[in-house]
Image: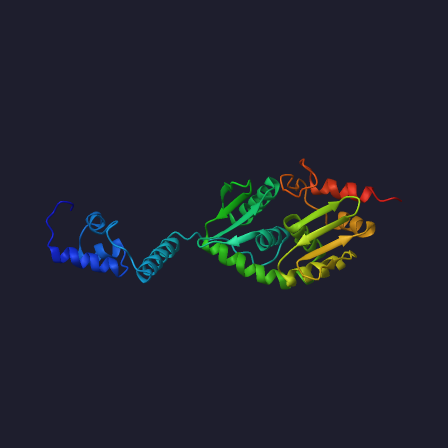
Amino acid sequence: MRGYPYPNELKEKTINLRKRGYSLNEISSQIKIPKTTIHDWVANKIILSERAKTRIKKRIFAGILKANRKKRIKITKPIKWSRGLIRIVSSFLFDGYSKIRGCAYCSRNLSQINLLRKIIYKIFKLTPYFYITKKGILKIEYNSIEFKKYINKKKKELLNYILSAPNEEKRIFLQTFFDDEGCINFNKNSKRVRGYQHSKKILKLVNNLLKDFQIDSYIDKNNTEITISNKDNLKRFQKEINFSPNIFINPNRKNAIRKFKIDKRTILEKAINSYQN
């Protein structure tokens, strides 16, 4: 208790343990003194070495994992692929990322966020945390280690499965790719759909899948972008794949040609209609 006259040797032992990187909880458990008293003895009085800081961080991380294991939520883990599951896994593959306690997905379009949220709830019965960043990017986070492990496993499986999947499932994969990674250029010098991706493997996969719908495309020499151009290809892309409804461009970008809100489907329609018959 605070104010109790503990022996000086006990205080010195506490300080030495702290210098070695022991957490307040560990010290309290070992010498049987309240954590508040230990805090008074060591707070702002000890400069920890990098080794001690690393030990404390590892202990904190281990504590988080242990707590998460205790409150881990059991989820349904579909074995068979479906259009909904392909949309979910594709979304996390293109614009998602893993966190310590789960995974997150980002988009500027509320329609994408809402669609993904509804499908995930339907299949997994999970509800996300919702955030808006300072740059106006929308983000949903799922704090479930089981869900994260399952999604990461299915990402790898999807890249192999999708080549032999039914065309309707290939459409979902391609549409998700262009919703997340794609854009439509329409000006005097350019009429083309483009998709950006740092993975050469995924670009080649998209290129092959487009061929199944008789859509020609090419990958740039840097292997970071895939392009669809000319009227026939754009018309087939519009008919077979297209962007999802309400996928809007970002008019606030410095290099944005259009400084007003407009969806990608509309721009694609205008680009196709601009060709002289």
